[in-house]
Image 1: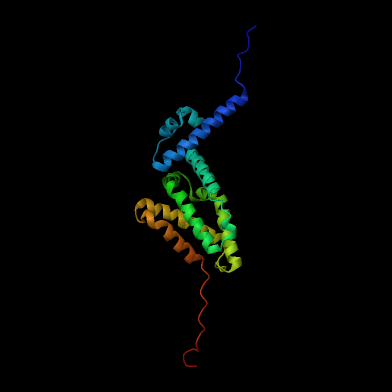
Image 2: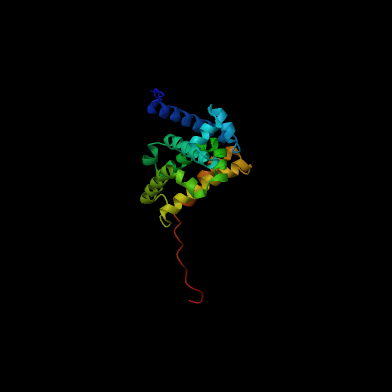
Length: 209
């Protein structure tokens, strides 16, 4: 009778897989944040795994970039947790949120360029749902307090926030915005957009009246 070959316990295989995935995501975040054209082979080497192992977890470059973006955004969302978002005056909280968000985004802006090349904009937006819920909560509070305009739909204002900060990363990478001016430009742009519309001047008598 042939003795059955000993099998590696499933939990051990799962632990190995989880370690490999964590290493791949860390290496992908680091390399793509430095060079959006970093190859799958480069990422596998930096993670200490073979290409076959990497492709076993992420079957395409698109799948890899998608997972790396999700990983980076999850880390960023944790960094952005700040009770001042719910307590400080809304304009002050928005300025602080923009500064913090830009500090994180600037470090990873090339990762977002890599994502732009292989992922649909809507998919990139989906990865930002958690931090954008934080933005929506802040804008809604500002509307209730009278600090922010309430004549435009809240989802549209959240989309504007996403689009503006995403465009800032592209402008910074293209050299059309200097590194030291991006945060202030973002704050002025967003607070200007969110400001309540000025009261309309009283209408004078029509000509000939």
